[in-house]
Length: 556
Ligand code: ADP
Image 1 (tube, protein in one colour):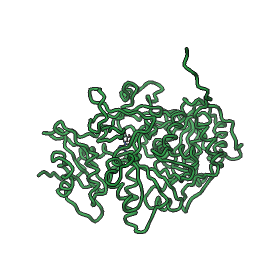
Image 2 (cartoon, helix red, strand yellow):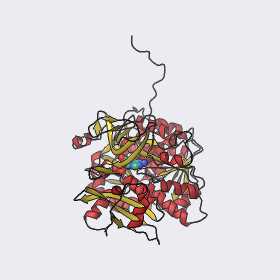
Image 3 (cartoon, protein in one colour):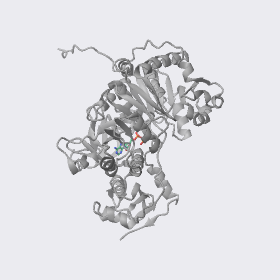
Image 4 (cartoon, rainbow, N blue to C red):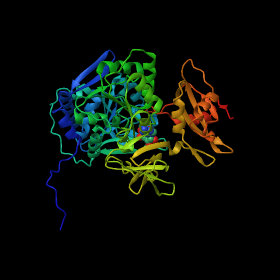
């Protein structure tokens, strides 16, 4: 006997269904975009109409089936329109990271076979330099309030047509006969930053984006509803702004888009004016905001009820500083481009209060339903969820990628090493505890191995950034004749403060064994950042190797 069939309808989980719901049922919600002198606003109903107009315009440019339409944009209303229109018309949205090295950008756009690219007016000079090398691009649409004044001539390259976004959407019907897409088809793609080898393409399906939005909206993650106003500071080209844009459309939460104003001062002004309730950004952004708030008495960001923070470990000192001095609650989340990205978030267990909560808030969070995790030892065996057994974190689930995009199979071998019996090898090393909280000690490639023992660079950085005179700290392994590797601490000291390596070692001594303490120290102006604003340890290691740091050796 075959199993009993359900009586449920087989509705497809598509971006088109998010668009249909968010721009009608929540047509009264709004997207606010920062401008030089304030902001501009558009209702979700308007966004829905303009998404239809954009789809007509793109169809006329020949976009059909699963062709790639790329964006080279800040977070703004037009980017949201592209997010909705492109997948809903059956094409594939490809968000390009505007801060990538030029050769990576060119590689990615060619590899993905981008046909049309939508470019923000202020990014035209950056984009124009690479356009001649983008082999498959036929059209460039320039978007933004000053698009007409941009240097359009710089984009006039043989074989490529340049148009204004507003001209493409103007005078088009404001409804579109959206096709019924298959939920398993590609909806959007995003490339990893390619710290080793060429960047790798991850293709999200409609279904994965839909389910991920649902998970992000739950109380275990961001807990969104249509009273919320969401400020994604994390770029829409960085793992789809952590799913916040689609989650906002799903729940009807309004969106506050910072466009290109990402420095602490304009951000604070935009937050005060647009009054978001939830925001998301990497720790370096919140660190800058914290310094700004500390230096400006009386400035309050009282609309924010929740800050989501991840992308790299979120120091407890940063969380405490924001909460205790400024009343801002921060929740750590963990994920990767490969996991859509949100896979865990750090809401604390029931009954955990006071100081005890920091054990959990310092963790990478509790697995969300839909993401399975396991810790795997070097020999491939699975380790217990006991909070102490350390190994590589592997995950799987409906919004975790099962492979990389490689149309020609080139590079597939290296990419396939990222998978293990259907699980994604995250490259992150740590533990799982009995309640499903992840605690990472390092990325496998950043692990410091001294005399056969691991030293956690993340723990050292967290503790160093807990020192009142330390603004930033990055710890990397450097070669050592006797121990193979020893930790080098690179430290940014608060302006006007003086602190010595001996004092910092004394500060660490309470929490670390003596052999774990860094014995090489360098005071630097800023820890180098990756294209998405994380500490770039590869550059720190290179800086050391090239003798660019004034290193002080200390032992006692
Ligand atoms: P990139 O390789 O450019 O950093 P991703 O943005 O996909 O690309 O980064 C994913 C990685 O970021 C994870 O594998 C992990 O190492 C790190 N990461 C993300 N969130 C956290 C977190 N909360 N704590 C520590 N590391 C994190």
